[in-house]
Image (cartoon, rainbow, N blue to C red):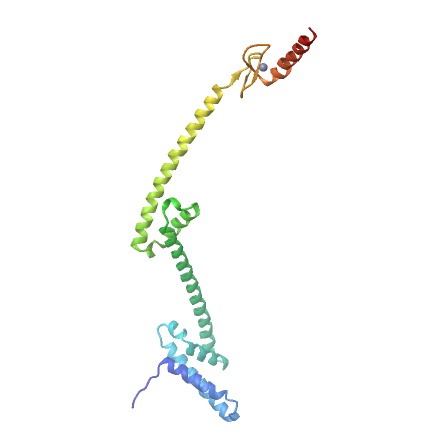
Length: 233
Ligand SMILES: [Zn+2]
């Protein structure tokens, strides 16, 4: 006797074909009933074949097997109900995986863009992205990319050092300027308080510069008095 074992895909196709005949609207009811029985039988054989597999994940991704299982579910096959849930789960996993791959592709593209820039041209955000992405994808990076990253990293370290030295020089310059400004304060020749700026001519009360207060309350009144006195005489 020749033993002939069908492939799972063939069992699925059997279910599918018989279901088409069972749902043919030109058939008589008795024919339809007997076809439905054959569909149910084929469904059982399909489920049996699937259960013999060590891992049915790949088979459950097949379009015809999925269709056959949904047909079995329609006819109340309990195993097919469980398998339907598994198919939904597999589809969701597949979509999740696709999304993750898409995200990885986009992030790798972004990283590649950053790595083609000159270190000095990178903005704060680029630099942060670069370090994060390198940490995340170091295993996926090509040797070229890793070498580029090393170059940029070293260049950034140098730039940071230069910037620090520049800032230190700037701070020292400011400090010196402040000291000079304090030294450059003028002492009022009238009240002896110090003040900033050019001050005012203290004549005729004194020779030199005086503060705004003395100018307003002493120097200007004196000048006005002198003016009228000279006019009267
Ligand atoms: Zn004064």
